[in-house]
Image (cartoon, rainbow, N blue to C red):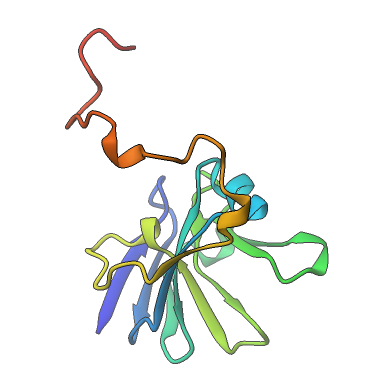
Length: 136
């Protein structure tokens, strides 16, 4: 299977060829900092290949203090992008960077002990298709 993806500004585009083995929602403090949100949503594959279609020169890689916590991102807009980890053995793809439907559902929430204190009962909040009326 082939999956297309890109960054927010559109200057970087990529293709993933293969299947994802896992899909995790990570609540660790580092992933929350990376995303500015309650969790990161990452797809993992040990067999898929990544091919940059454009903008590879804009792709940056941040390895937090050599810990293996790695983030790929666009130097222009800052969008999260795929990266290769574990000496080339693991492809990590931010689910939101794909321009197509994600073919699998998340397997699990991980590092829940580090969850944000406001990340409870979110499924019970009102839902809107756009910004609610009267909001900026």
